[in-house]
Length: 251
Length: 299
Ligand SMILES: Nc1ncnc2c1ncn2[C@@H]1O[C@H](COP(=O)(O)OP(=O)(O)OP(=O)(O)O)[C@@H](O)[C@H]1O
Ligand SMILES: [Mg+2]
Image 1: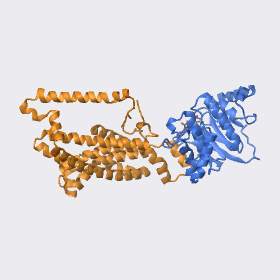
Image 2: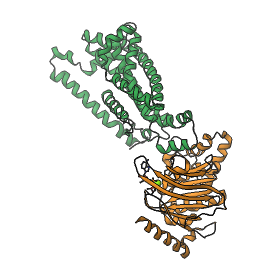
Image 3: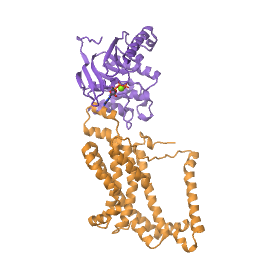
Image 4: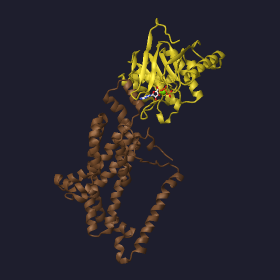
């Protein structure tokens, strides 16, 4: 089921990844899959099964204890579970940060930041400091910050876990739209099956710890996906199948 | 304020040695006055009422409890005002001494800030240096200043240099501890972000650790500023050569049993402490009020 097509060019590939922490916790066992450009792959799995660990390995923040990752880390986009905005910078300053770290000059990074802020719909809040933003706005700012890099590979670690259902759906719509316009290779992590199915080209189900990829679903719907898709019987049926598989993986 | 702050500084200090324990910056809170008449009254009425009650009690002790022969023990407030504040000869003497001590305090604080920032920055960069230096900082902080007064006198004489030394010894610790704690306070996720984007050590320090440290630095500054005023007075008390500071004046007044002047000098030195404290509070508001909550309006 986890077989991947070898003819395509992968932007991100995990080969037999295993991760055992120094304290003996085996978080991941034998994870192999890949994400090609133009693909949006979502991983769902029970809490603590090693999803965040997988992204940290992909980004190089953690070294796996087994296997290898193939990815270009020069312009890797990584949206954390928390917004991690710098509280002493306003939205514009925060969104400019990554371009600043990459040594892009002032006018260019300002332009990139304004463009990204516009893409996530925060233009009227660019002067606000994080403490006066709602949770959803903070996530938008965090998203915009990563967008300034125009990353060919985009990792999302449960970015919308802390916002309400309606806001989450809005953010899903936006992310899906960005995926379309930017054409990156996306690897997304979530607990929400609807979110996974709505945005992805492919959904992977991970087992409880030690995490393995136990099932894979292709999502057949065309982009752009409209919010009404959520009420489509076919959509519901696919969500049901993923849910069933996820339940199985819990045992 | 000094005793509370000292103990807070000591606590946060020992906690930092234990590592990762999330000690919040010492709880220095500031209330920004609101502009409505009602809340203004609410803000100023309680301390005014308490102040009036204290003055009332003072009068009661002076006139009700003390017999006229023993009244020199606590002069009534209006006599303090007349002799200590309204008599220009006395008051100008106090102001001059206060100015001399203020200069000592400012120089001492400045030196503490430089040494403190430097040490804390180095300690934040190398765990080994932190481990090596910290125990001695705690020891330095635990030395009663009285015990090393003779030494300070031997080394730096009995004038201004020694007064400044006392100031530095007293006010250094909170700056180091708070700055170090602040530098270490940036969240893990933010560090990860900087790591992901290949930030150099210097960039990380400038763009992440220092800005994140500001609230704690200001908390430390407010404590140390108060302590440096105390240090200047204590130093002046022991090392009296040269310009007369508040410490010398207090000594002189008490040896001559000049109760009114003595109390006036005490009031003025505490006023100096308050001014310094408020100044750094204001500075904190200007510097980080926009993004940090402790200096925003709190109800
Ligand atoms: N540094 C570490 N040392 C030891 N164990 C760790 C470490 N980091 C994570 N783990 C363990 O590895 C497992 C996977 O953690 P991870 O954060 O990847 O889970 P997750 O799937 O992202 O969970 P969630 O959905 O709740 O975010 C957990 O059991 C966790 O306790
Ligand atoms: Mg996680």
